Length: 345
Image (cartoon, rainbow, N blue to C red):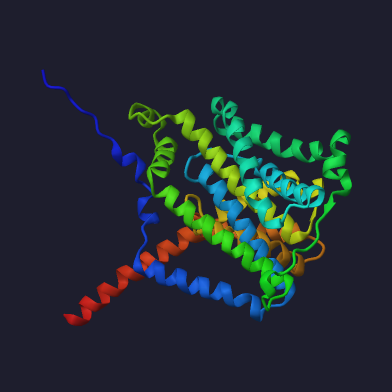
């Protein structure tokens, strides 16, 4: 009797074309990096601070996209991991005098452990139930930071003030420029790590669990392990972003990490593009600059203007900004050969 083998390797490669490194993409990334390195020398200190925040949010959004976009687990509580990373950096700097650059890996380790542990009980929840559980985490964290028995560490409602780091090695930069380059270096490293992670076996497993969880389990993928791992990796990225954000802002307080921050992160990955690495950058720019633009348009109803922007982006670009760019680029690539053939004929 012949045995029939079932092969389903294709379920894990739905997003593979998005992760291929084409020569045109390499040229575009090189130009983008050149522009990013030039910005601090042509912008004001306030603009430099804003672009630093864009890099911080981009790291956080990439982490959330790994969890939601690539693994399909919805989180409305990533502001909690951002807060944990920020407070880890602030406490280490304020209470123990740890150098600011060492607080970033410390925040990563703390959030990795907490994210993985939170992912274990969350395995029993899916969809809206998981979203509510993570939302509860995001709502509870600021209140826990205000708890009177933790005030000696967290500073309570007053928060913790952090001194701005000095520029090292006698570099001809001011403090804002140095923090920008410090954040840019870590952001580039995290994006490279994320790109390699998602194009490898772990990334294919995460996408397989998102698209066909039963088939993925039949193929031998440990869905429980990979789901918890996705939470841990996602929390690590968000915690690193929180530490960098605290260093850049030089202040942490519980009210800075409300549930609205978690919702803003979710808005960022949807606007930027789900399951897209570049979408994290576009989403970060949206949540950093669009509220400011809305406030300039209308002082009386800025959030109404923000809502109109949000609806407009979703109506014009339902696949996110990165998705719209892919569609336009595919159309251009299709039209250029067609015109060339027409001219040859």
